[in-house]
Amino acid sequence: QVQLVESGGGLVQAGGSLRLSCAASRSIFSFNAMGWYRQAPGQQRELVAAVTRDGSPNYADSVKGRFTISRDNAKNTVYLQMNSLKPEDTAVYYCNAKNMLFGSSYDYWGQGTQVTVSS
Image (tube, rainbow, N blue to C red):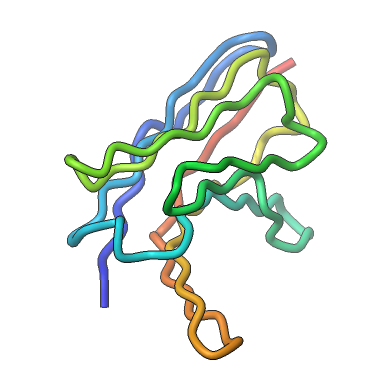
């Protein structure tokens, strides 16, 4: 088990920036990947960005060039730097820790943090 606590959400104008943090209760190095997902009202939860144990990132096409995911293994924390925010980025953002074992995925989630981008 692991507890994931997100912070850094809020209200920002279009074009602005926010930095989300996800603090884990134990070593994030033990997970295959750490990531950020988001869910807007009436929509499915979607992957925003993820970073593997070896530091390789991947991004949703909609955020490439604007968002940057990073991890600090010493602090057991994952970050999401969000620049050039757009109203369509408005959603609840969730931190995710993922382990893969024998072809199955084991996911842990934070409680979410609201990001609202005004036009």
